[in-house]
Image 1 (tube, one colour):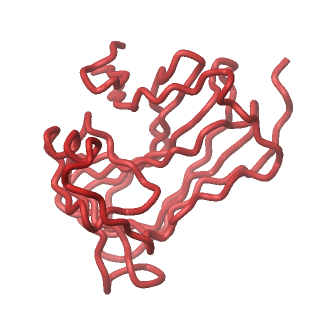
Image 2: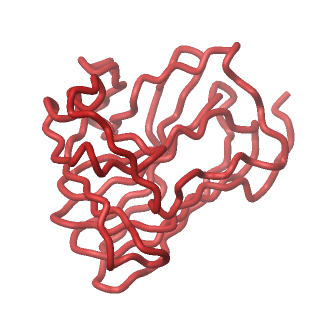
Amino acid sequence: MFFGKHGCATSIALGVFCLGVSYGRSDILFLDKTSPPIQNRSFEKVEARSAEDAEIQSLLKAGWKLDPANYPWHWRLNPAVPGSIEVVKGTAHTGERCVKLGGDGHLYYIFGAVKKNARYRASVWARGKGTLTLALYLYGEKGCFGQENLLTATLTDEWKQYSAEYTVADPKLQAINPAVTAMGPECYLDDYDFVMTDKGEPIQ
């Protein structure tokens, strides 16, 4: 494993492309049984980002195809694995909007600290053409150290919920950023969630 030009921990063998967001000890607030909810889980909120914004410029230079004025609020794109993204209307699973992800793009959410030995469930409603992967970027004291692919599925034309669970068993794991990846021309995503399903017991 090595750190690439975007600060991403990258492993060719494992397919690891996690952003090097550091969660040091001073940043960790270990959770109780109530996890913070995912914000904008249905992609209803968009924000107008400036085309001159440093993050947007980095994504565009990396090869991402996106409209800065129609950016999914509270979500992030991984510059190490560019693709295309669009917030679209009229074809959502619930509400008015959903996200259309294409190429091999990674869409992720900064969730943060996780409780030791707890179990979490990632879920999303999706349809389209291509392959969907539910993944987790894993962080320790020194930053990102790996990526866990929870589920990979071939999409269909009908909306379907995909879900998988993960137990925090690694004592060096301090924080998680859940991610969704799409391999193919179009992957429609809606109603994403990442929740604690079992509080677990402290790791001694």
